[in-house]
Amino acid sequence: MGGTMTDSEDTAGDESEVASRAVSKSELFFGFLKIGLLGFGGIAPWARRVIVEERQWVTDKEFAAILGVGQILPGPHTMNAAVMLGDRFQGVTGVLLCLVGQMVMPLVIVTSLAVVYQRFASIPEVRAALIGAAAGAAGLVLGTALKMTQKIKPSRLALVVAAIPFVAIGLLDWPLVPVVVTMVPLSVALAAVERRA
Amino acid sequence: MSFAMLFRIAHVFAILSLVSIGGANAVLPEIRRQVVEIQGWMNDASFADLFAISHAAPGPNIIMVSLIGWQLAGLAGLMVATLAIMIPSCSLAFIASRAIARWSDRRWLQLGKEGIVPVALGLILASGVAMMRTADRDGVTIGISLFTAAFVVLSKRNPLWALAAGTCASVIALHFGALKMG
Image 1 (cartoon, rainbow over the protein chains, first blue to last red):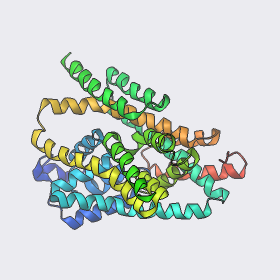
Image 2 (image 1 turned 180 degrees about the vertical axis):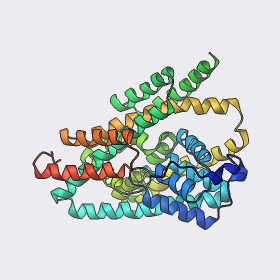
Image 3 (image 1 turned 90 degrees about the vertical axis):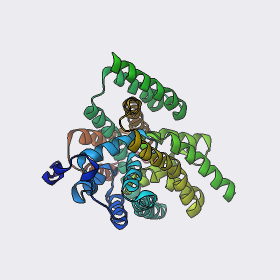
Image 4 (image 1 turned 60 degrees about the horizontal axis):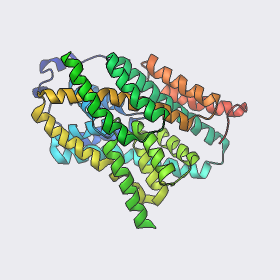
């Protein structure tokens, strides 16, 4: 697949604001509508394909930065990216258009699936297929976490920091909020110390 | 029941929205804890069903929350749950978007970004394991999960292939009597 090719035309303005072209309200809406519709098993790869490759709203570098910030904020990183892109191109209206565009079709599809499922839940094949899909989705998340770790290449200290919420929540079933509230300041402090050392 | 129920749905998911660093997958254990253990809205099997249905649909994984709302209180529940999980985090993202545009060169902002990354990684990893504990019931399903994880790490192909293969494998396993049915 040619997905990793970067367009040479993009290099002109690089990461500066100048590089991003004007994006209209309807472009935002229909772009995110498409992302929502395509996004099986996580929508980040599809968001990149539509936003960077197909429509060239922003460069790859800018997209990575937006997604990175979206990752550290609460909420799905792709949804946070939608908020930031919408705000950038069309202000508050843009934000709303991106969010509605991204959510509307998945919501219709998921409720239709739920209705269909209630009717056909007694068929063993349907249940088996769903069991298989869920097991696959679990593996998708595990694999994505491992791949991200591989790509980000955290320091040894960062790996220890990552291990704590993993054990506390994944294995010991501790509640999320106190763990996050404790670990985030600790991790930021350690990052500051590590950088100074 | 309806209004009180809607209020509780809004309350539970609005708080979840504010702490959901790492997205829906990272807070899955907490969603399960709230929905199954604390609120007692459904049992583990129904939760696993909703989880599976929402992952068979395209879109952000957060639509699982919408589906929980739908299951509990119909269309109103769907709307309330969706808005409750979206508005707090999206408002923060909006504020962050404006703040970052203004202070992007400050050192504390860089440090903050750096410090949150490992926590987010740990949360997503925890979520993968928690999801497996919810979804996997026997050797076949554990195998499907591990195969899919390996596929994501090792292959650049669309994970949709792995998901489709896992679904087929599960149906085939059923026919050979190898799949444990709930």
